Amino acid sequence: MDKMKLIESQFVKKDVPEFGVGDTVKVMTRIPEGPDKFRLHPFEGVVIAKEGSGAREHFTVRKISYGEGIERVFPLYSPSIERIELIHSGKVRRAKLYYLRGKVGKRATKIESKQEKK
Image (cartoon, rainbow, N blue to C red; front, side, top):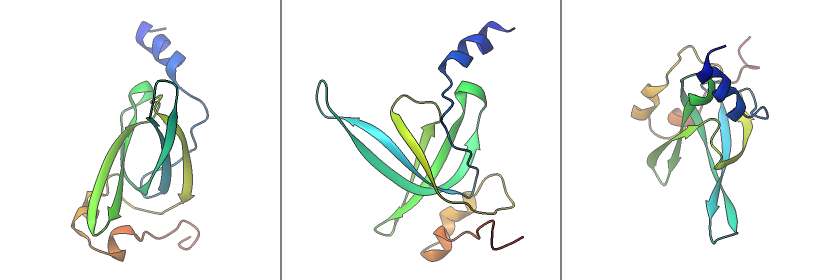
């Protein structure tokens, strides 16, 4: 077995839910507030991209806050991520949803669910 794959397999967490592009997720990140204290900060939005593989996998989440679009890239197996919750599963036909950057209002966040369109 390749040495890199052997090392990467040790860092990969197994409790990550299955989600894809177009799904709405809530990412709970750890924010340190002291030497031994931290708080959880939620970031809820639509997954617009997933890239990489193995321990190097990362995903981009986009949300609209006060009329301004905010995107954040999270490494999937980062120790600063406490948990990822799947809020809504969406059906899309593209691997990257960068076109949502040009949308405003409900058009920027509403994606058909997988149950509606079968």
